[in-house]
Image (cartoon, rainbow, N blue to C red; front, side):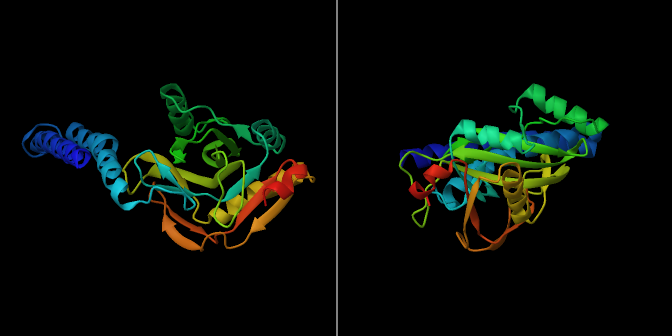
Length: 265
């Protein structure tokens, strides 16, 4: 009860503060001498402060707090679908991904964000550009890989990986050491849900899942693939960036160490 009251007080305070700031900006638009600066101020306040707080607050109410095959954004919104499972160590995963032509993405920071903006504006290659943080098991991705398309930072294959909790089982009695979310960035644009600048992903996430699997098998034919068809129901939805997504619900289990296959699937 006390936590609920504190959250309501926090929300009320946030709304009051933002209402005063919005009132100032709108008065500048209608009665001031400049329009551009207030409009930019409204966008920054909305996209990077007000809406993220509102999303975090309400997503705690309507989004389940357990695994159901979707990642979460830092704002609490549903992110990309989990569409690959890996059996193997961290070193095996890194070695396999690099052998198949994928690069480890840089950590997201102010410096790498500026470098991404610079590369995007001038269309310069940034083969290790960072990816935004998505969350699974209440933790952001531990590993992220990408493969740039024609030295164009706007388009890239990329995948995030999270280690699974110890002694944890997937629905259906499956086990895996890592879960991943693979998607294809097709351009940079505005999120329709958060109004922030972000990469826009391709709708058919299954194509990127299958592309990743084929890359790994091509670079190492000894890798074992066992697919759990209809692991989840197929669905159409939107991710946290407002992009349409589709998946058939299949989950391939990629065994990097084939000696352990019977222990997991």
